Length: 178
Length: 194
Image (cartoon, rainbow over all chains, first blue to last red; front, side, top):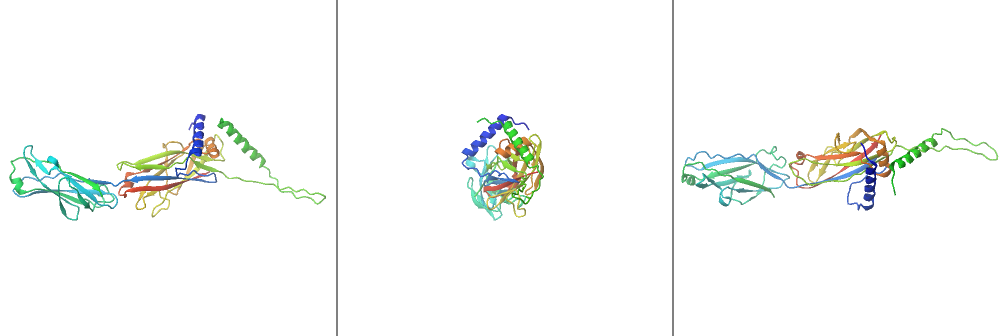
């Protein structure tokens, strides 16, 4: 290691300034001279509330056969710590409506969310609050496994009125900590 | 005031040499003889052990982190010791201990009062992190080396020439599941000259 005398000057100056001007805002302590010398360093880290929704799969409602078309996907919800969470669903229809379209025609569908305590109907862009059962330790739900279910339903009456075609849409789920 | 480190070092060497010369006597105490006057002598000896001084430490403040990446930070610091030639390598050991956990009182951990987050600690006997060695809480890392010139200066004058590095890492995995809050901890470093 090569340290120039200029560096030594700067270091000495910095040390002098630190001794003279330092207002003890720092908690780190240098060691004193002795047979051993012990110093301490304080470490701080801020951890925010964190959530994650994952393990979602696409839902294929199949070919409409005159009955309600029902499909679902499992979900993994992670939430650090032990708090609850809220979830908000938004569809790809106008104004976030839960609807599927073939480009010309559209059909609405219903959404339900179950965190393990029972299914609840969701309204578009309206959060379901106080959800529980999230994995508190693993962002991939290695602890709990999948812990929620999202179910979509196109009612038989709505499906029966549709022209033939393939209807698609996107359901966006937003999880937030409480 | 101009500061000439080499002239200062020369004076230090001269002083040490003089001390070595003066303390080289192997005389034993002599007792006085009976007479009108009597003179006895007593040899006085002072033995000094190695001295060490660890300076240049500062806190690590990580703030709020992106949960998708490991957190890492390092700082150069100053190791000082006596008993080494200015152009020789002075060996020393370093030991670090953290706040502990339920099974290891020296474990490197941060806490928010509810949960703990483990972190890793590394020490390097040179500035920068290249070639650093991971530390285990409470376990002494031997065979660290530093140039005597800098070690002596750091002993005498504080953190004059950084010659070591302390680095820590907080892996994403260690933070998984930890409840929100401010996590704090104290890392204690002990320098032991060889």
